[in-house]
Image (cartoon, rainbow, N blue to C red; front, side, top):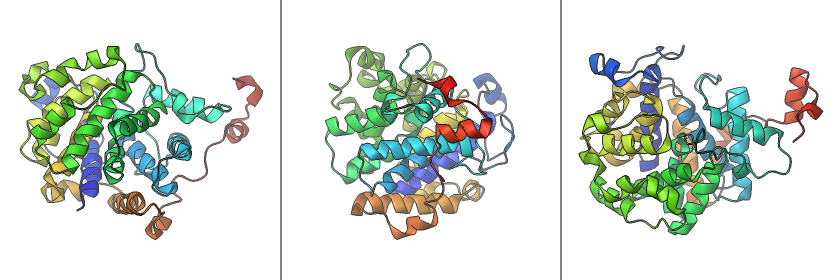
Length: 353
C-alpha cells in the first residue's frame, strides 16, 4: 500500500474497531478489553462500520479532488457541501445512513446550509465551553499528504488547517491540535522515526496561533508525553485530550494492532482516538502490518481504496483522475435550505438569519 492508503485504511479500520465501545469507561474495558473486530454495542450497526470520523475525512478528500487536487476557496465550499450531504443524506457512510455526529459539527452544518453569504470556515463554533471537541482534529489527516505534496511552509499549512477546521470548529484550541497532528504526520510521511517526528512537532513554528491556545498544549510541546502513566492519560472527546491519548498510544506501540488496541482500551471517545491512532500507525508501520482478519471485515474497503488512489493522483497531477468517475457521485447534490424546507413543509422565512 502507498502511505496514504495505509493511513486512510488504518484510520477507518481503527474507527470501526472503536465504534462498538464508544463511551465505555476505562474500568469496564480493563475487565473486558477490545481484542477483535465486533459489531453493535454503542450503536446498532454491524461489525466493520466506521463512524463520522472516517466519513468526514473521506468527505474532505472528495472535496479536494473535486477542485483538481488544489485547495482553493472553492474547496472549502465543496467540503462543507459534502459534510451537509453526510448529515442529511448519509453520504460517505458504510450503509448510507448517518448514525453519529457531534453537536458542534451538527450546528455548524446547519448554519452553513441555511446561511447567506457566509464563508464555510466561518460556520464553526468558537466557544471554549462547548466547542472544544475533536471534530476538526478527526478529519485533518489528508492535509498532511496535501502539504507534503506541495512542499508548503508552516504558515501555509496552518492557514489551511485553520480554515478546514473552521468549517465546524473555529476555536483556536481545536485548530492548533489539528495543526500539531498534521505536522506530526508530515514527519512520518518523510519516513522519520516516530520519536524524531514527535520532536519535530515540538520544534515546529506555532507563531500563527495565539498564546492562550499554545499554553494549553505546553505539556505536549515541552515534555515527553509517552512517559505518562496510563492512569494519567485522558481519553475524552476534547481536542487536546484526544491528541494526548493518540500520541501516547502511538508512541508506546510496537505495531499497528498494539497501537489501535491500546488507544481503544483507554475508553471514552474510543472510535475517534482509535481512528487518529490508527491513521498514524497505518502510515508508520505500513499496510503490511494491518491485521488482515480485521481488514476483511471493514465495510466499503473498495471505495476507500479508489478514493485514496484518486486523492493521491489529484494532489500530484492537479487534475481530477479518471478513476474518480466511479465514485464522484458519492455525495449527491449539495443540500440547499430551500429544498429542506420544502421537504419538511417549513417556511424559510422563519429561519432568516
